[in-house]
Length: 277
Image 1: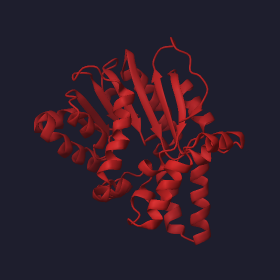
Image 2: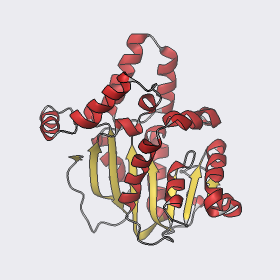
Image 3: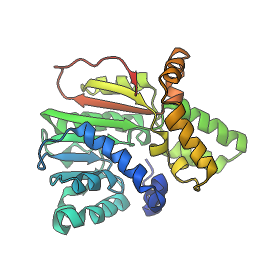
């Protein structure tokens, strides 16, 4: 990974930055809070690849007081510490948010965390780095802990977007896309990565959250085109008949562009099939 790409400008523009709709932002992170199913404020939470700190800040605003993060980008660590300081205090934010790679097992002690998040990171990691990161997540989890992993986009929609950039002749954007999204996943490849890390998938599913996840969509100017796209992705594609047709046609990974997975470090629960949410 090229650290120079992930500077202040990158993180401030990610998912439209300050222009991101608060309602969309809240919907996106509220989903992760629900998946975490946290019972007490002192539940230990780690966000691996914490970016600008959006997820940890949302947890802190929701009452969590035992939150940690790490990122290999100095810009990300600085932004996250700034986001969390009002909730945790400046000294705790400095201590809890570490500069370091997910490939470094020594960042945290083994068996430390109740919940570990890896959101919108998988697609950025070269394969060997991803393997190390997943193995470390297993190591850092408590025996009864849970990892929540999200990757966007799936390989299907990623390839469609690459073709669009090629047709436009936008080689600069194409080169940047390939540098940033260097390890986009199919469901099959994703499941193999989870299993190879000796994590157990208790639930794995495809979800249509293009409107909430896509920096391209969030960066569009407000107007009729954006409203029509939002209606199509959130209303039309969510209809049961459409979902069934998409599945029958084998197009799920192109139409539902996010993969979600809930994992444990034990083998008490066997993972089922992939579902469309």
